[in-house]
Image 1 (cartoon, rainbow, N blue to C red):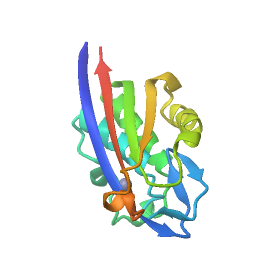
Image 2 (image 1 turned 90 degrees about the vertical axis):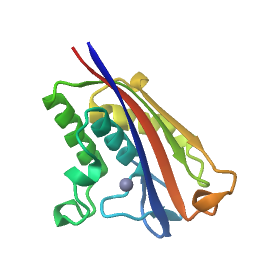
Image 3 (image 1 turned 135 degrees about the vertical axis):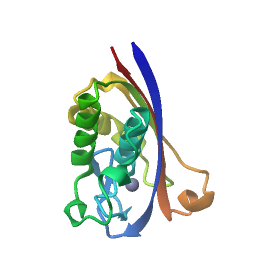
Image 4 (image 1 turned 30 degrees about the vertical axis):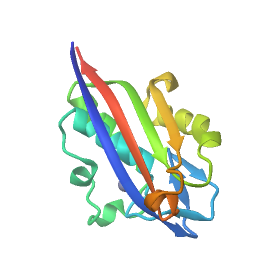
Length: 159
Ligand SMILES: [Zn+2]
């Protein structure tokens, strides 16, 4: 069996009045993330970690932010396409671990819904998806509420 790991990192600015999509669900908040797509930072890092693990470049390579067909696109569609790419290359997902860095609102109450959503999109068990959350103790662009960041690592395998 061939086992590989991958890593993803992403940042988005937060702006007042935008919808805030995170982990495939809409979080009630005064601010949302700015981006060409729906700016779902958690899905973006999972996509990048999966693509990296399979050595298939990154999310910007496959879904350019200059391409109008991806304007405002639901990142769940991008994640579905990434999983399909991995499947075409013979890979299955072992597990995903992720961390969202956000000063506010609290992410923890939304984690169960995110896991349910992500499991459905990727067609894997919820038990194989970990989502964690942290503030940055009011330090840096996350701490000043200017942005949201996320990290993910994944394990993929092929027989
Ligand atoms: Zn992004």
